[in-house]
Length: 201
Image 1 (cartoon, one colour):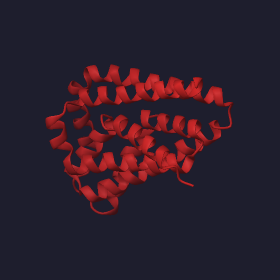
Image 2 (cartoon, helix red, strand yellow; image 1 turned 45 degrees about the vertical axis):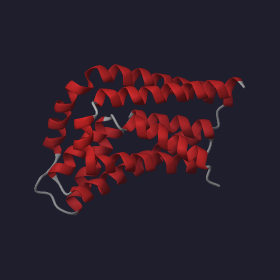
Image 3 (tube, one colour; image 1 turned 60 degrees about the horizontal axis):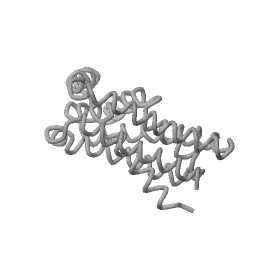
Image 4 (cartoon, helix red, strand yellow; image 1 turned 90 degrees about the vertical axis):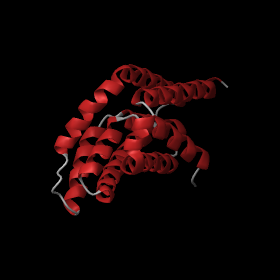
C-alpha cells in the first residue's frame, strides 16, 4: 500500500535538496551540448539505480531499534542542513567552475544511445554518497515504507533533472544557487525538527 503522505514528504525533501546540487548543473550543461531528451533519460536511469541502492540500504537500516533510527535520521537531516549552508557561501562562485567541468565531459558529437550512456555515467559517478541519497536512506529507515519513499525520491530527482533540461538556465538567471542552498537547508532543519517531535510525542 502506497502512503501518499510519505511519497509527498520524500518528494519535497529530495526535491529542494537536489535542486542546488551539482547534478542539476551537470544535467543542465549536458543538455546544452547533447540532445536534451536523451540526457534526461540517461540521468533518470542513473537516479533509478542510485535510488534503488539507497532504498536497499535504508530498508536494512530499518531493522535497527526505532529510537536509534529516529536519532540517526534527525542527525542526518541536521548534518544535511549544515552542509547546504556551508556550500551556499561559495555556491555562486563555484557554479562557473562546475559548468566548465561538466562541459568537458559532454560529447557534442554523441547521438542516441551514446548520449544516454554518457549522461548515465556522469550522473552515476556524481551521485554516489550525495546528500539526496543519504536522506533517502534516512527516510526509508524512518518510515519503513520503501515503495512510497522510492516513488517520492525518484519522482523528485526526475523532476529536478527535467527542470534542468527544460528551464535550468532561465532558473539560474533569476534565482541564485546560494538561495536554493538555503531553502534546502531550511527543509532539512524542518525534517530534523519533525523527526525529533515524532520521537518525543
